[in-house]
Structure formats: structure tokens, C-alpha cells
Length: 440
Ligand SMILES: Cc1ncc(COP(=O)(O)O)c(/C=N/[C@@H]2CCCCNC2=O)c1O
Image 1: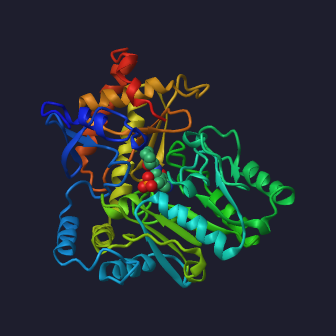
Image 2: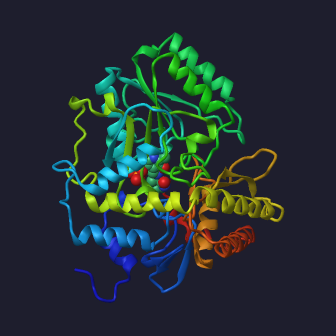
Image 3: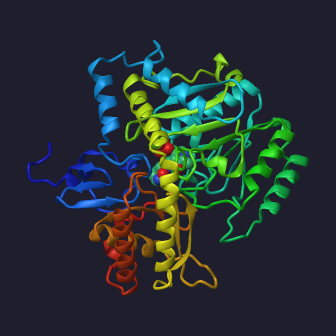
């Protein structure tokens, strides 16, 4: 049993499984309001990660509290699997309204981006009879077997990808080792040789590659990929779990490229902190019964009530525009910091999906060591802000604050990042301070 004087962090160490942790700083959360989490030591910590974007509206948003309280007070069951409920139907109708084109579609609900991508792969294979998938090196589609097996993130190389998966490089304008043309040529060559397109059910792609390094693909790449897929009857699955629902400066990040995806995966911020994901796809696929993607509490009335409150708030308060505005200011501020901090090689992103690429020198663009990235994050936490790092070289600060971040909070975050970068460059953070926070 926990001893009364153990800290929350010590109790977490003693009781919670390490396999579900990916800790980037010592923050142990006691509470949270708006853009801030309350740390175990009582400090208000500006959350520039929004719990890896799950807290899309920040913490304790009144619209979510009201919706969840109402849904709990008169609970329409706990299982969409067994009976329809109003919030699930209303949210599905609202989500379908946001989709481009007039295809007949259906919504499947899950609890996480992981289970939604897993369901997508399973229903696609079952409904199309095609066993192969395409995805990208650096992609992160989730942490359950089916979504891991179609991911290309180096954090998962201890598990094998699914048989027949074709992993392509994701074109990166800052490190253009593979141009978009070369990637598409590689795909064409695969189609001509070892990956017959008629065997491929779908391509999974993030419109901005998040965990792989917050990479915005070169203009036109996504559209060109979509056109190739169409040519071969290969469906497109846009994984918007992290950058969707307004974060990129548009409701759907795929719309920046004029894409009309066959399937869209939403999660994280959809639930406003509650476990909720949504897979939107063609009715012919989503109603293919042998696919069997059932989960007892998927689409329950409490989580879907939260999701409906989130979507309505995003739309009613025009948060995509807000994200574009604040994101532009934040990126401009970060680019100004680059004038003082040589370590900043690149600032990139869309809206409030922002990456700060840290390099040893701007000529070679060689990533900084992971310890350096981790030091910036731990030092920023000591100074009052929390965010994480991404990238296959663990050198990209990921800045994805709540969509309700205020201008003042934006300035506060920039000041903290500025000081953290300076303190790390001055050697003020010892290596041993970050060993516990370098987990991928
Ligand atoms: C594009 C994309 N698709 C699916 C997922 C999986 O979502 P869940 O972790 O909610 O199952 C994710 C989750 N990404 C990781 C989760 C691990 C912690 C590090 N940060 C993330 O955002 C994602 O970014």
C-alpha cells in the first residue's frame, strides 16, 4: 500500500505499469484549468502540449463539463454496441456534415487513435479483400497490434510490421533526402514489381507527420499521392488524430491540400480529454459486417456528448481560424528566437501544430543529441511550461497547445522556451537530470 508521505510521482512509480508511460518531464498533475496543469508541487504549468493534443479545449472547458455532467446525470446506457444513443447519433451526423463530397458514409467510434486505425486496417482488408497497405517511415498510427503493424515509427521497431506493408519515406522539405517526385517514383516502381497495386487496400498517411518530426509535406505531394491511389483503386486513410479538428488552421488538415480522403481517423482532441475516436468511411466498407470491429463502450453517450461539445465549440468559436492566428504568432516568435539561438534549425508547422527542429549546426542540419532536446524540455518544465519532443532523431520540440491558448499565454510560452534554450546552451542542465525523460 502507498505510504501517506509518498509523492504522487513515487506512487505512480510503485503502482503504474511502465509500459504505458512516455514521460518527458517530472510533471505529476494534480489538476488543470484552461491552458494550465497544476503540478504536484502546486505550480501552474503552461501546457504547450495539451496532453499530446488530447486536451484540445484545454482543461475543464465549461462546454465539456456541462455536456458530460448532463450525460452522466441521465445516462443513456454505456454501450452503443447494444443500443443507439442521442449524443452518438448527433455527433456522427455533425462529423459527416464536415466531410467533403457526397459519398454515403458512416462513423465508427473507438476510444483512441490506436483502436481507430486498427479498426480501419481490419475493415479495409475485410471489405476490399486486399491484404496490403502502404504507410510511411516515421508514421505513428497507434499502440495496439493492428495500428502498430501499419506504423513506421522507430519507437516500434521491436515489433514487426504486418506482412506486405510497404513503407515509403515521407518527403521532408528541411531534410530533402527523398524528394516528393522520388517517393512517388519509388511507389510506381513498387507497383510495377513487388507490390501489385491490386493487392493494396489503402494508404495510411498523416497530413502532417507528427511523431515522426512534425513534418509538413511539400505542397502537392498529398494530392499527387491521392491521384495515384485513385488510379489503382487504392483507398486513402487520412490519420488526423493529432493535427485534425482545427489544430492545423483548418477543421481538417487534409483540406489544406484539397484532398478528398476515403477515410478519416479522428481521436485525441475529439474527446476533449475523454477517450473518444472516430473512423469516418464509405458506408459500403463501414457496414461490411464480417469486419467485426466491436467494443462495448465505443461511442458511449458520455464520451460522445463530450465529443459533440468539442466539435460544436470548435465550429461555433471558429477555433481553426484562432489556431491559424495564434499559430502564426507563435511560429513568428519562435523564428525570432532563432536569431538568438543557433540551436534552432527550423520552425515549421501549420496552425497550432508546430515543430522546432534543433540542430548542432545550420549547415549540416545534423540533429542535436537527444539529451540536448530532453534538457530543453526538462528546463522548460522547471521554468513553468510543459511540452514534448518528437522526431526519429528525437530532436524536434513539438508545440501543440490547447486551441484556446491566449495571446498572453503564447508570449509566456515563448519567454520560457527562450530561457530554456539559453540555459541549456550555457550548460546549466546536467545529463543526469534528463536520463529518465528520454524514452523515445
Ligand atoms: C497521428 C496519430 N495517430 C494515432 C495515434 C494514436 O493515438 P492514441 O495514442 O490516442 O491511441 C497518435 C498518437 N501519438 C502519440 C502517442 C504517444 C505519445 C507521444 N505523442 C503522441 O501524440 C498519433 O499521433
